Length: 596
Picture 1 (cartoon, rainbow, N blue to C red):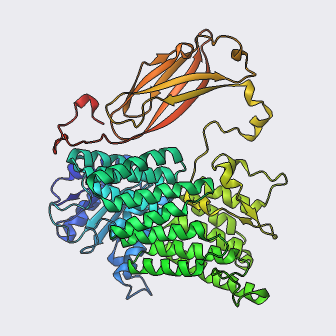
Picture 2 (tube, rainbow, N blue to C red):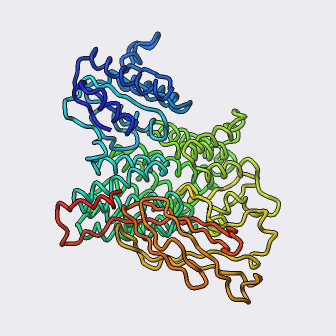
Picture 3 (cartoon, rainbow, N blue to C red):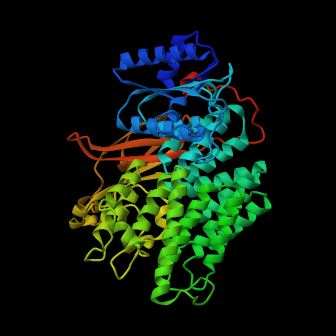
């Protein structure tokens, strides 16, 4: 996305819009700018056959009965109106009259960015075209540079915002561009933060091993460049990986908190304090009331609404699940039936406060989990809305969180007669975590806290319910092994492919037939050779040409009959090359044949 300072070149603006789907125009009188926006919109809309929607920021405050609306409220109205348009169908959206200072800030948090940041957030997953007209843009200024001169730090900020919102899908493309921008600039510190965010994104998506490897690399790179806050964040994310198995590591989280404090990072220390408190909240006698209150105060000091919202969420969850203990080693004055009612009302207030903050911070992930827990812990609240499950499921669906939808399904269906978790949960979460799932006497699930830390995808090859009637040992499987650790751009990495028959398969007692394994790269990478023979030990050389996530497809065929026996896909994360002390500050451009 880039500013077009003057409005002389309609063709260039049209090309920019079609390439980036997002254009910010300024540096001209209102009438000229508006006419230019209309001309670009008409050209693109006519060719693509799309409708055009137009908004003026000033009009959002002048509707009947809404005079006196503040600029911030008017901006929010524009973003919400645009969000509704984008969701319905592809179109061309023109937002004009963006006031001074509202279009030149890159978002710095989930909800504290500019009007432009809100529009970017609404537009993130849309197929629509967006044109923004700024009333005060200076010629040559830019909010986010175009593809040729991308601002790696701005891209990292946007990726972090998507992760904070609970939508890691949108972060991947931004991180790929950010890594390349930092490499071109020779910015080792920026590369370290990019690797860290890759690791964080993998943790959010439930890819624990990839996350662990990337976070270890990021931690070492932070140490190499003396980035102490980054080292603390990497340690904290590594500690949070333990929660996925249902066994949190409070000691590692406490160490991350100390590292943040030594680095002078108050916000990082507040987050580490929160996750340490969450990790210990269910321990008998732990003073969770005092700790949650202290954490909330820390987040208030650094004006972190998202951190405050998650603190209120977990405080309410702990309060709703207690049996009357006050978290300081004894029974307080809230015991008995009356005390139970008071605790429930206090939990309701905390859930409501968390929900309001998640909505302000535009964090649908936290909003969906708070709505779910509030509904489960407060039957009166749930029964007021007969569509409660559908509403929560809709919020999870909006960010592609199928795991969250599966928890809603479980809450609606209740415990299974055989005590086994549903397939949609079993194929996504480790057995150790699902073993910590509990049920109240009323049949409400006590969902493990760690379930809301990730949005795991189904594990490849996990047997579907219909497959369980077939013995696994009677089938053959394809096994892929990465023989070289930490793939980096433009360096071949070896991948071994084996066909492994189960003990009941005919090939287990006979030589493997001369099958053919065909390899295909689905991204910016080469794979050689194109074919291999598993019986002879098929080995492929995978050469990626840019950092990021790369998908490979392997097809095993029987050449005698031309039958495809199995097709598998693998996803490999490629990290930036380690620059090393000899790396020049201005690297030479890559050869054209290898340009990503």
